[in-house]
Length: 513
Image 1 (cartoon, helix red, strand yellow):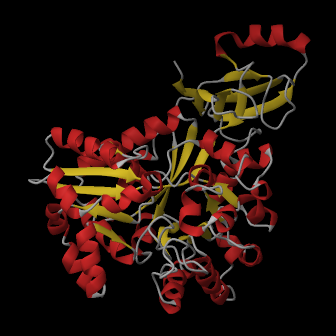
Image 2 (cartoon, rainbow, N blue to C red):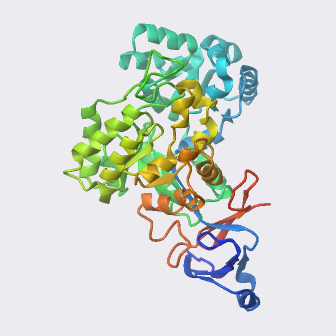
Image 3 (cartoon, helix red, strand yellow):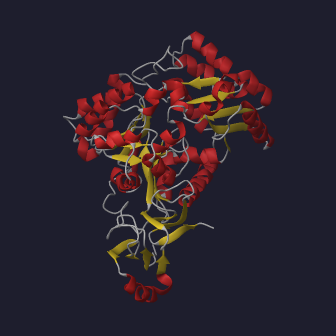
C-alpha cells in the first residue's frame, strides 16, 4: 500500500496533558515518533512539514477507535431496510410499515423496534394488526435486542414458524400465545435466524457491508470486530469479511460463529464463536436471571444449552487453540459459562487464548472475580446503560430500579481485574464510539463509572488487546498504526462532540463537512 508520510500537530492529544503541544511523525502507515514540543518549535515544524502537516490543534486527538463487538452483516441488512430504533408509538410504527410497503418489496423487513419505548402499546402489536397493514405481503419486524421478532401471517408461513415451534418443543399453549401475538422469542427465535438471514441476497449483504464501513468511518472507527455466522451461507459471509479486511481504510476482525470450529480452521481464522448465545436478552424476557423478571414473575429467562452441551462446544474451540467468544446477559448464563471455563482450565491455557464472555450485563462481583481469575475477558456495551439504564429506563421496566442500577457494571468488572473492551453490539445500539465512551463516563450508577483514560481505552488499547493487536493498534506510540480519531470537542465528550477526521494509516478516510 502507498501510505503517506506526514506530521500531526495537536494540543489535546490522548496520553498527554491538555494544552501540551505534541508532534506525531508517521510514514508507511505507522507512527515513527511521538514527542512533546515547545511553542517556539512550531513554526519550523510547520514549515518543514509543508502540505504534509495535519494540524489538529483545537481538536481532541484520540487513537483510532475500535468497536470490539458488532454484527456487521446484520447491521448492513438493517441499513438496507427501515430502522425503527426511535419509534415510540404504535401509530408511528404503522406509518413506518406503510412507508416501507410503498417501496414495493415483496418481503417487507424492518428492524430495531424497542418495546421499552412503546410501553404498554407493545401488547397491541398483534399478528392480526400486522395483517391489516400488509395483507398481501410478508412482513417481518426485528426487535431492538435481536432476540425476538414479529411476523404477520404471510411471514409466519414463509419463515416456517409453526414447524420450528414444534421442533423446539414449545408447549401448545405458548405456541398459541406466540401465534396470536405474532411474536417469537427465546431459543426458538434463535433457530429462526437462518431463514431470516437467508432472505437477503449475497448482493444485498455486500451492499450493506459497504454502508457499514462508510458509517464506521463517519463515526471515527478505524477497526471493527465482526461477529458473524448466521444463516446457511456462513462460508460466503466469512470470505466476504476476509476479503474486505484487505482494504487499507479499515481493519475488520472476524469471529466465526458456528457449531464447530472446522470452517474457522479451514479459513485460517483464529477466532470462534462470536455471539454464541448462552441466553437471550432482557427485553425479550429470555436472559437467564438469578431472580424472576419484575414484569413477568412467572419466568426468570432461559439457558439455551445444558452444562454438558456448552462445555463440549467450548472444548472444541479451546482445544483447537482458538479464541472463543460467548454471549451471556443474565447471572445464570454467566455462571454457567464461567463454570464451563473452570472445568476446562486445567487442560487449556485460558489466559493465553483470551476467551471472551461478552456483555456481562448482570455480572456480580463474584462472577467478575471468577472471570478475572480464569483469564476470561469481556466486551461490554456502555451504551446499553445509556439507552436502557437508570431507575426509570427499559431495564427498570423488566427488572425493577435496584437491579437496573446494577446492570452493565463496567467499572465494577474492570475493578475486579477483568480486561474489558467497548462495543456497540450494533445493530442493537448504533455505531457510536464517542457515545460509548461518554456512557462509560456517565453510567447511571456512579459506582459503575470509569475515568476518561479508561473509557477511551475500552475502544482503543483494550479492543486491540482482544484481537491480539495490542502492539500495533489502539495506542498513539511509535510502531503503532497511524490511526487517529480527531474530535470536535473536549475530554468531557458532551453530546455535541463529533468526529472531525478519521485517519487510517496516515490517510484521511473521513472528513466532516
